[in-house]
Structures are given as C-alpha cells and as structure tokens.
Image (cartoon, rainbow, N blue to C red; front, side, top):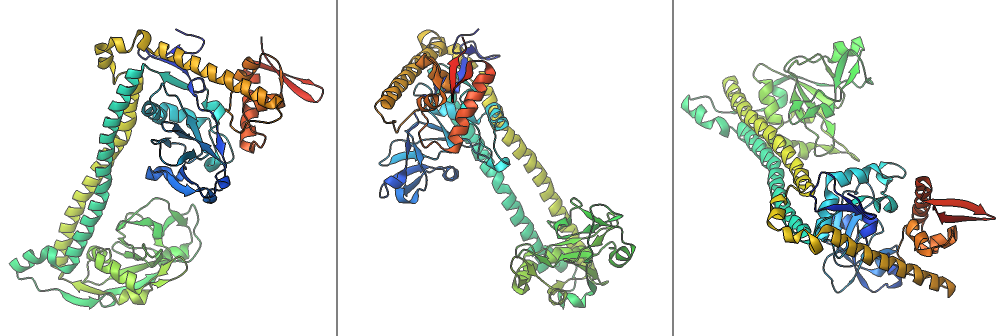
Length: 533
C-alpha cells in the first residue's frame, strides 16, 4: 500500500508506515560564529564530547569555527568516520545557547519521540546503510552526505507506540549495559587472580602447607646466573616473510606463552644452527616498551624455531625447572625488578643479560618446583576456561543489543501492546494521520522559507539563517525554472558556503538529474534547471 509521501512498512505491523527522513525533518539550519560572542559561554555538542555524555561549556573566544544552533530534543547523527556510530540528543534548555558541531546531522520533529529516533538510528539496518554510503578521501576522512541521508527511510509509528517502544528499549538496553559493564570488569579480576597465584608461587605461600606436611627443605636464595647454564642473545639477521623455520620475536610472547601467529622466517642454515631453540629454553624479552620489557615464555618444542635479537635465551641447570623459571619471571616480584633495573631509551627500555643474571630467585627443591608447577597449571586452566566462557558471554551480549532493536523495529516487541490498545494505533491516533500532520507542517515551513528568501534577495540582502532545502522541493515551490545561483540561494546555502556544502549541493543536482526528476540545460553562460514534466 502506497501514498505520495509514504509506504506501509514491509513485513511490519499494518499500522506502521515509512517515509524519507528529509520529509519529516523540520530542522532549520541556523549557523553561528561563536567568535563574534567571545565572552559568551556556549553549551557545545562536539563529537569528542559524546563519550562523556556531557556537552562542553566553553567561551566563544575558544571556539574556532561556525556551529549550528540547536534546541532541546534535537537528535544529532554523526556523519564523520570513525565516529559515525554516534547518536546524541540535545538536553533540556539551559542558561546557555546550545550549539553543535557541523559534523552532526540534526534531525528535529516534535511529533516523533527523540528517544525513538535515537534507537532507530542505532539499529544495524540503518547503520549499515549509513556506512555503505559515505564518501571522501580515506577511511578516517569519509563522511555521510546529508542529502543522501535525507532520503533514507524512517519508520512512522503511532505516537503512543513510539513512546512505548522507546520506554521498553531504554529499560532493556540499560540492563544490557549493566551486564556489559559487569562482564568488562572480569578481565581485570582474572589478571589480578593470575598475579596473586604467581606471587604466592614464588614466595612459597602456595605450597607452604604441603612443605610443612612432608618436612620439605626450606627455600634457598640464588642469583639467576648461579642456577642457569647460559644466557644468549638472539639473531640480528634480517628475517623474511617466508622461509624454512620461524624466527620468534618479542611480539610472539603473550601472557607467559608463545603465540605462533604473525611469524617471520629464515632459511639461513648458519643462523638456524646457531640460534635453534631446544625444548625447555626460556625466552626473555630484553627490549620493549617500559610496560612490556621482561615478558617471558617457555619454548616447549612445538615446532622448530630460532629467536630474534631482542630476546635472551635462558638455559636452566638441573636444579631449576624451566616451567618454574617461567612462573618466577612472570611474577609481580620479577616485574618490579625489571622496572627497577631497566635502562630507558626514547621509547624503549632494555635489560641486558648481566642484569637478568643478577635477579635473585627463591629456589625450592625440584620436587617442590614440580608441585608448584602442577598447582599453577591447574589454576591457570580454570582461569582459561573462565576466560573462554567470558568471551562467549561478551559476544552474546554484544549481539543482544541489535537483537532487541530488531525485535523493536519489526513490531515484535510491542505486538501484544498493540492488540491491547487498538484505539492508540488507528484512526486519528494512527501512523498515517500522524504523517499527514508532519507533512502539512513541513510543507508550510518550506513554502514560508522559500518566500522569505525570495523577498530577502529582492531587498538586496541574504538571510543569515536558512534551511537547507532539497533542490527538488525548491523547484516545486518556485514553480519556474531557476539558474544555479538562484537554486543555491533558495536552497538555503549561504554566500560563504563551505566546500563541503557546495559538494552537497552539486551532489543533490547530479542525483536528481540522474533520477530524471529535473532537467538541466545551458542558456548562454548560465545553467537552467526545471522540473521534469
């Protein structure tokens, strides 16, 4: 079922309809240069301020470019990557003039719930459409085009159902956010747990009760160099993307383990013979950022490999189990030692082999080392299991938001509510009646703006506050052919229109010409535009 201004939502409730965003947006573009009011404090909705959920309160003298005047309830849709997923609502009226960055597309419609619009703009279906239609130079500099966005579909629902959906989504998504917050806190807890286990392992606390029960000898203190047979720097030769065997680098040490992703290789036989690792070798990251220097992992013979120059290979004596050494060097005590003895460069820190050899280690018997390794392994296996469950839970919750939004905008979320309240979704309370009110209001606004602009032009001045009007509507209202300069002016573009605004204007023209809704022809030095009959 269709009308000139709307269609019934496909696969949606019979009481819903859809139209274009531009046909319901009553926002009138009003720009202001805050520098002309240097001592006035403004309430600024900037794109960076979005993350704090609080606008900036800033004096005009500190604002370097023109902004848009906005009002409470306006919905701000970010048009620039990589922040294009941001949607914000202008707060209640304050003591300051409210302005917004030009990187926001402003949507205003008093007959549609702002909260409903915010949720609609956050739905994946709309996000995918928006992101697929950006243009510009490079991924981080691309922008959504307001003209194109104005033609995107928008669902029109009965006002009562808008509020019902917005209320339910507010409650449901708030609960989802709480769950996300709790889940996001778990990795910190797991990290603290891991560090506590390592600290207890190297201090003797982890096996104290076991040691007392069997009268195991107490811990003895040694320098690391006294209980290892060799500390060796890795190869400085250049590695290749392909080759016979991998060259392990500092990036391959992650969380006390070797990560066999992102490998480089060598085929140099001499290098392989000299630096080939054997099972039980411990690799120590001697050069890295201050936070990461000292990372350690054990090579367990997973596959043949050599090691790069930013690593030190530690070979253990018979009195030191490599697995226990790996536990020791990843413990908080060892990290504190590394922080204390490191030499700092411009961006990296270094710990040489001598400083590593001087590290003091509390060494239990081999039997107790084996016991510690067994306990730590079991505890870390539990932690790994929890982490896997956590990742699954986070993935589920991340999908949950869009699942809820999909239910809302398919009509499923309020299906029962509609059955219980038929009088709120039909007749004068229905979506079609609402859209008729919106359309009548918008048509009245457009005609008024066009007439005022004409009078202003005849009087020899251009209004400072104009609405950017799609050129198709301008030509319909003008009811006569217009040249490009007249079209630019009547569409609401200022004399000092920015390059971006002009690009938008010409894009609008090109799309309408290609769609066959307007015709362009040249008369002398001017281009004349008319409606296609």
